[in-house]
Image 1 (cartoon, rainbow, N blue to C red):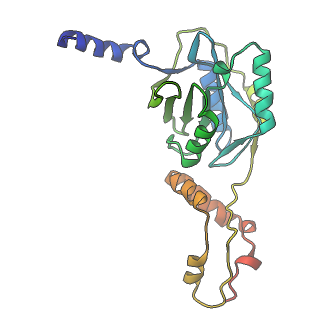
Image 2 (cartoon, helix red, strand yellow):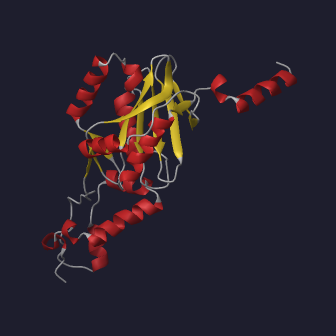
Image 3 (cartoon, rainbow, N blue to C red):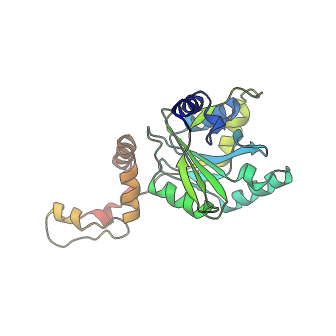
Length: 252
């Protein structure tokens, strides 16, 4: 390829990235619904992107299922996943249309996946031929990664944008609110400290050093944005019921 042709190809990439690379696109309605769910509460929320069979990277709908959510996690109910899959198959869709694009939000500014996000993505989608992890932060930052598990495999970040080129329906806040109420169960993010010990001697500083906190919790906490970590700390301060003084008190 000569330099002129190479330059033309680069310009074409900039003008129309869809022509040369994978691109995750949302219908305006699906995007509006995702924003509605993101801003409805102070927790993460998650769901699946539903696309047309002839355009698998164009998200026509954003669908949620029953789940428990906190400021740092989401967990689908097993039965809800099975019900969702049955409903989609009954509607005539194939798994690649409704079970390849995992979408969730972060209540903080960052859209970078946490260690928990990576573990969940690996566990659920490691056997799929392809899958996408998409994250939307509170301030509009996005993260999208396409993974291929066929052939030599591989993964790469891909661009995201809202596509207004196709017909789309209007928003329906009433229906979206009903879906939110039915599927999203916010729970208090509990800090589990199973190994608290009550020392018999020593300073308060030594007592704190003796507390054993699970590594998984620390990794998740460290992966949060500063604002999210502060939210957790403020929650602990405001929720003395999370601490059993009979167990944590050191008898000084």
